Amino acid sequence: QVQLVESGGDSVQAGESLRLSCDISGAIDSSACVAWFRQISDEEREGVADLSFRTGNTSYIGSVKGRFTITRDNAKNSVYLQMDDLKPEDTAVYYCAATKGIFYGCAKVPSIYKYWGRGTQVSVSS
Image 1 (cartoon, rainbow, N blue to C red):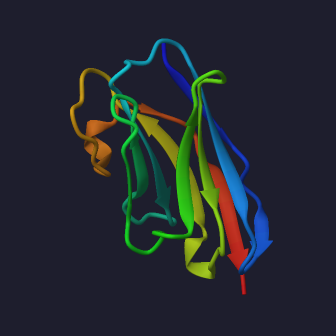
Image 2: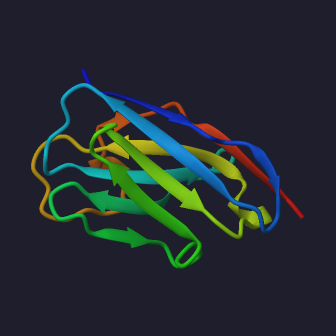
C-alpha cells in the first residue's frame, strides 16, 4: 500500500521560501510520475509541478516557473518542492500525488494520479 505524507507547510511573508516534503512509503513504480498540486477552498486542484521517475524530467506551470523546483531523493524515497520568492497568490493547500503503473510522460492532470497525500497548508502574506 503506497502512502504519501506531506510536510513543510507554514505561514510566511511574501518573498520568503519554503520547502515541502513528500515522504513516500510502499512500493512505487520505477516509471511513476509524482506531482505537486495545490487547492484553494473549493476550487479545482491545480497542478504545480511534476517529475518523471523514469526520465527525471520535470515541468512547471507558468506562474511558478523559475521560483519552484521539484526534486527527488532516492535514498529517502522523498520528493520535495522548493518554493522561493513566494507570493500571496501561492497560498493554498499543497498535495503530493503519485501515479500507479507505467507512464512514459507525466501531466499535471489530477485524474491520472492514484495516490494522494492529505495536504499541507501554505499561507503567504503581503
